[in-house]
Image 1 (cartoon, one colour):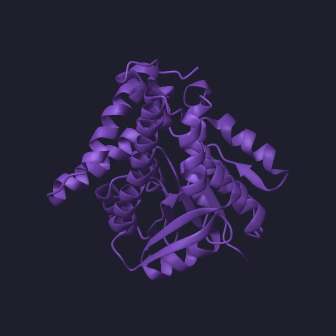
Image 2 (spheres, helix red, strand yellow):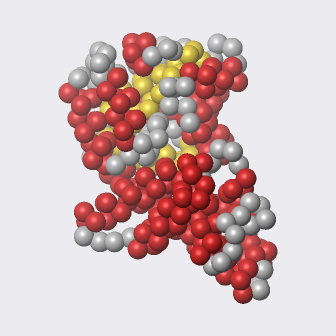
Image 3 (cartoon, one colour):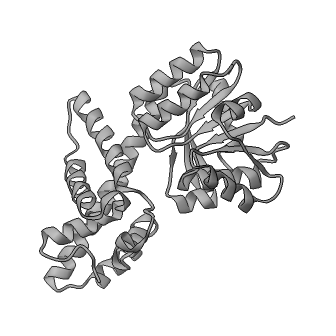
Length: 306
């Protein structure tokens, strides 16, 4: 019999990953769902079809029924709170797969706590935006004891992910160091696009020519973010694709890692300063792509490009 799976956290990424597990993982038991806002669990369950999932009322209820527990939440504090709830139950032999983007020190301490209670722990952050989560095209990083990696592997490549980075038998924190450094590539890409589009507009070149260059030379994420900027998606949407507070959390963790290692990430410092302006202008619904608006304001333009 296949293991029973329990999923904690149904943000943009979690919903997409659950969808692909239900559709591709050949489960013989419903996928158990829990979210602090219960209606989100109910809505996802309905969308995935009758009998595919089951909504539970508490973390304790899900842990009691599950063999493998996935966690993907917004920040270190809420992850700690969720794992603390998990640890109140008997987790002997159960595998906790922690997919959130948190500080390496946080995941190390959580891993120790799980193992001390008789459970197994795996750090498994994923690379990719929500659209790739929906499409099952993420890149998973699987880090921890090899037997834990093997237990989780059926739910990554070919299911939620198009590829895996295997870090078997590496310390848990290394996966988060990789994830945080990797996320700075996205941050720096957005900063570069924002500066390029603002210079193109101010110099008279025109943003359409920069966009055509980006589409031709940097297809994929660069072109997608360029589109979001030029179409005004960064300020028009009601719910951000990558909320400013989450982006600043990731940037802050990366900067703290650099400081501890005796180096600096000056590009990230600049981007984070622009994110602070996004938060001031747009509040918690500000999106990471709002860096474009911040750079526009520095150049004497309106935050909104329409």
